[in-house]
Length: 220
Ligand code: 6GU
Image 1 (tube, rainbow, N blue to C red):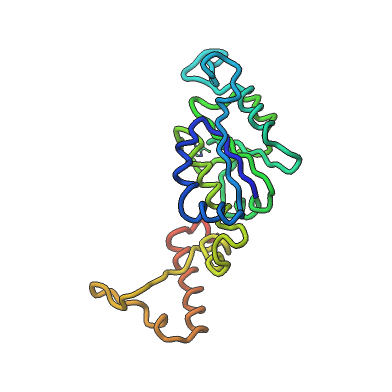
Image 2 (image 1 turned 180 degrees about the vertical axis):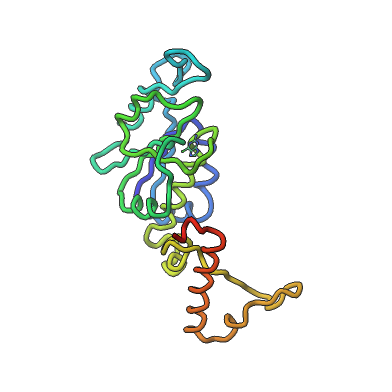
């Protein structure tokens, strides 16, 4: 899998993708992540990438040419081009499971008052990470990248991907580690029993209970 991220602020993303599991995945050649500054594709003086909106109004709008030329510099017939915008479809675990099947993702991060609407003719999918407004698409690109990379084969252990939140429409079951008792709070007895069948039953039950309590919207 290759992920090209088009951004005006590559430094915002560097620390994140060059650390931890994402870094290891790149070292193991399980994923290649490139940061592309689309300012380099500007044809204007001072590498300008935005301009005032036609019809008037506040703020600056990202112009089409630098973004479209940046897309074209990396796009192949196997690429999926994704625009990150609060107007997109809300991102879910199910979408992560679908996107992990692609060979090449191109993620485009916006800024300012948004993109020239004509950019939509050059993208396959618009994604939002939730109903709130961010200063730019970088945090969203990291959310999408992280959620996909961890699903790729051999990035993390398969058994950490089974029984996890959202995979079966339920939240994860509660987990505990040592000590057995912390400030009077005890680990549930069943987890100390060594009875794997009972433990599995208890976990399923807790998943259902937790989802009903915390996320009734998921439960229906
Ligand atoms: Cl993808 N971009 C911005 N700017 N804000 C957002 C978002 C994306 N998703 C939620 N809010």
